[in-house]
Image (tube, rainbow, N blue to C red):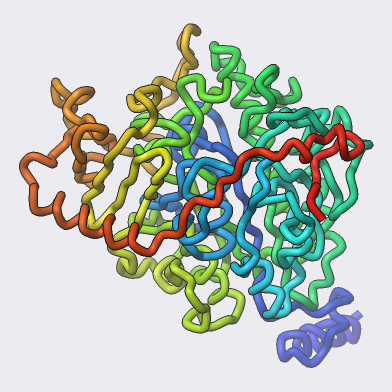
Length: 518
């Protein structure tokens, strides 16, 4: 009837004016929802928008419609990246610059540092973490629900079995919790699907009158325990019959489950009318563990190195930002960005003033990202590790790298086929949104840089694959970057790593990992 249409039009007008909460049963927050998705160990060549043979239609769709990040850097391994992501500070300021927190080590992200969840809660957000924590568990105060999150469903350590959720990190034990309570009834349920379902539950139950912060830290695509590192339900593996190498095919299934997760979550946001007022970020925590690292089958081709190295393959991150709030979407950003920039950037998005953040080292890049603006960052520190004795820094187009990067194990360029296996078919690399052009490879490319003997210098804009060490012809640039490294080192805090504590053994705690100190 005509009067029914007039009534609906009237209600719609009131909703636009903010005068009625009755349309569709609820009002919506003016502050945007923030959905921060972290993929674990996702390599450069493991997504379709980089030209991978692994199809990732959902990830590709949002990377193409949003802003794909081509010059974005993370730490070379998980704990440092996660600490930096959630605090806006560099790992050298957190004591997290060396390796990762091993299960029985009694330390974590220092309590004096506020997390993104704490900052956003102060701005009125509901805050939830689903998945991996890996920032400390030895005392309850280091657990997620004590660090600003309203809820947590997931695990605390760095890796575990995807189905039974047991971890063998020095000691064997179950690592799965809802908030502070151990979860024992999810055996044989695949973690990627579990975490997706939990994220959907958070979205479905969210009161849209408040803004939502959902930190979805997937286990995918990290290796499982060493006895069974590559795990995916057969339905995902069967999507890739054209990948001949079986290990890479299983890995592709792991990636495909992650891609489905992105599609399911964004679809639900759309159904609930939340997508139009959301900012969605996908980021890896480090480069891919290729060359047999952890028994995984990731790939960083054509970049040099692997996870836990300072080569581009270890620190150049896969990522995108999608939001209808972006003013000029649908482009590839080549501007420099560091993982520590997410906190001030998202604080700005949430309605805060990033200049109010105290002692945060990241940079607010929202205006740059949203409007395809000019670069803001001119340099970033990759890392200074005084225990492993290596470091790297990027200033402008130049990267300086020095020290014992990987003990000579993972310093080369690696195929996407795991060692000792047959090759597989590949699609045209140029079909990706981002294509890395390595330029000419010199005859001495594999020996011209020996960073344990002397610093190496690369122009990573013209030479992203780190083929040409130009240190010898640019002594002034080398000296300048060494000086910057020295400046950073002067303000670094000592690494927080501690010896393992046998009291952490899950056998003393009903078979489960969790806080062991009062």
